[in-house]
Image 1 (cartoon, rainbow, N blue to C red):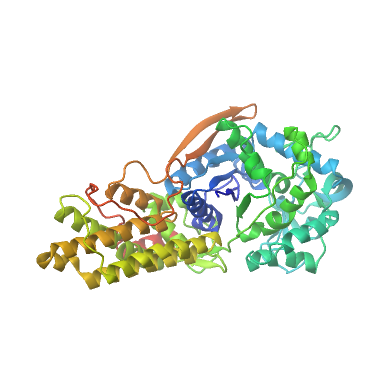
Image 2: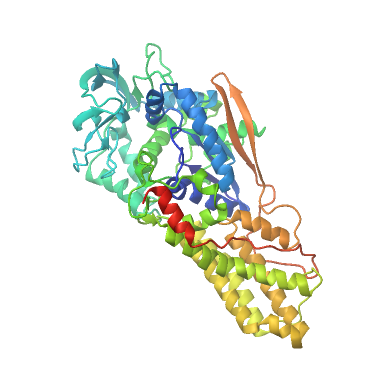
Length: 594
């Protein structure tokens, strides 16, 4: 029976370009997983959008002497362009600056209040006398009081990964002007995580058997080391979602609290845009639905602890307040397959120092499947990985081109030339033919098991290993020589190889969708393997923005071995991938300034 699968993708801050570390950290693995689930025939929606209200957006606006709205719109457009170029098939990529997101976020706030998981408390917060305003936590930097990291952010330390109390930072300074702020009293709403802790722990313990160790370490492990405590969910801001309570003008919902609500609001917006206003409930009020959250390791506490707490704490009140429904409870995360970080040539990626491989810049010179292949083969699923230009060149030429691209091209070209542009009719299968077909067919189970466990790097390795075995089969049968003495035997070898390639096309399609579409066409199939991407302009009272959509009309149910019909007309093939020149390594390192 088809499952309901929500693929929830980290929301990029709309304040800078996206680099390869961001892509391999969350955006690409989400797309690969979603494409696999669609091929299986499951009901999938993949949603995300630009985080428009994050303090990095307002920091950028201050630096550029413009408005947060202008900043978010500029980068939001760039995100959509990149995702289309890289083949990231979002069902909806939206923003947090929409009427819909405001309403959904405020409903979650009110539901938590109804269930008495919110309280108010006066606190001291960093205040800038020079700027005459309270500073959000990410406007403050200093030395971490836990590990001593000197550039910790006010809300979280990138050195040790712990959530922080900004007021305890050592040697605090304003991110804007470097001045030393002072502590001043203000009042805010808090979410009572201490009260929610028993339910959050129960939720986490139920997932211990299959969550990644790094995720459990930063969620259940941290709770066991130090109990949860209340956390403020409002801030003194003028850019964001207003607190929906009288007398709280001039304060907004804290971005970490409302951004994660975007997974829910995006599903609701998708339902509205597709003319299915209640469809979102199949993923969000369905205890059998599975939601997967693709994020980087720096976001683990927010998605594995706090977001489940928000969902649990909302109880049935969100359904009542937003949809007028009784006895409806929001679906909790099924898995949070967070990745570690990718470095660049042995050093941490840094946008401020321009030490990065930027997504759109890369795709101005190289093909998207080459990028997708390398980022998957080098994906930091369990430990930090490193982008190395020499390694990129070697993997592209020795694996993507030599193992897979050449296999498909030489067999298709040979068949096209020698059987009048048609798939040859095979004779009776020999043992060697049946063995390779069985191996390929078994790949749908072995590769699929890795996909289901979100072991994407190993899934790719298994698929490429099967491609290698098909190459060995051709070395043994040698149809290029067979045809000179026994064309019927050669026809059997080529048909067997074409069936294997047709199956490999599906096994590798989630990783390499562009070449899979080309191969689908060369093999004589009509239409597309996957659906089409579209963009449209959406406007509401908060302004206009573009959304990225996806129509997976053809993909469903294709995760199965090939049944390639003999006699089907082929289209003249061409190489799937480009072999790269050794000189690109020096050229790209020169661009980095090495």
